[in-house]
Amino acid sequence: MTSATAASRHNWESDLERYRTRAVQVLDKHLPATSGCTECGDPWPCARACSAELVLEL
Image (cartoon, rainbow, N blue to C red):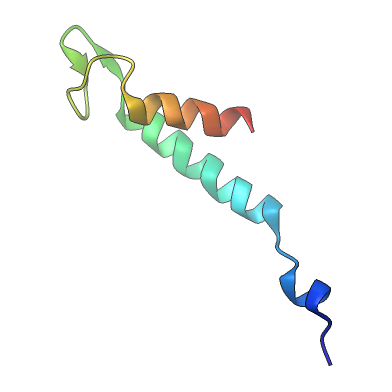
């Protein structure tokens, strides 16, 4: 029988690594330009780039 504790364990490191990988992919596309973000056109820094930076700080 599996205990509730063992069943609820989660590999947070693999999740963080996946988030970091995705953040790098976002930052490779969302770059500053004179007219805003090169990918989404929002004013720089766009929300996606800011979120990706936050993830990389984890």
